[in-house]
Length: 315
Image (cartoon, helix red, strand yellow):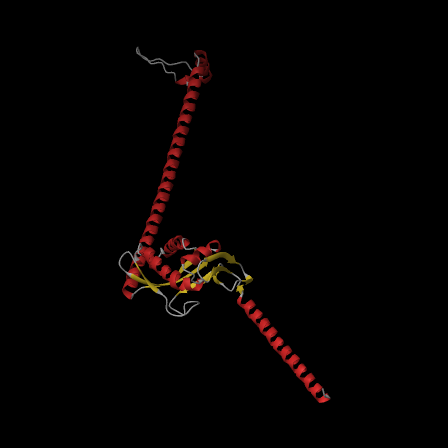
């Protein structure tokens, strides 16, 4: 074999080796790239405040609930996330939070009126029951459940509660009481679905001009009644006070009169006792002695047959 042929053969061998190496590198790169893609496809991130329900693509819940963080999940399985942290939601006329359009709504009253309300509420999914919630709502995400179930039910069940109250109560002084009743009612209603209602509040209530005037009239009448009651109560208190003062004065006068009478009685008794003691002490001998001491030495004078003896000198 000539030198020229040998060189040609070596070049061919070298080219085949280079070609094989290049193909091997491509295959390795494809394998690595495929591995990365597969790894990314099998990795699921659960955000903070959420849990994930793992389910098979051919149907059925896997039973595994993923907590916050990164997780490897089989390519044949999927994950639906649910918020277990408190989510704030709005049903308002103005654009606010998750209510970009007018979502205020009408509620009926027991006296046949209609009231327009804005409402805010907060909710979360029960962490221990998210798999059950997933099944109940056929795999819908938490956001889908909020928009297609939670918000519509908030409206419907609020209307059930408002129908028990007249418009003057809803718009007036019983608003807090109604809000509290609604809170309890919604908690009970949503509990069976694994949804927890944390707070619910009316943020605005509006009525037509005629109803507003009627409500204001009732408020004014109520205020006047309360004022009249206060004045009546004040007058009653004053009358009782005056009666008490008069009674005290009368009792004082009686006490003073009784004291004066008692003093007079005691003085009379003392004088009587003194007179009695004096009378008891005037014996005949003492009387004679007193008369003797007062005698001026002149004898009594007698005139006529029926003469009267004058004792003047003995006085």
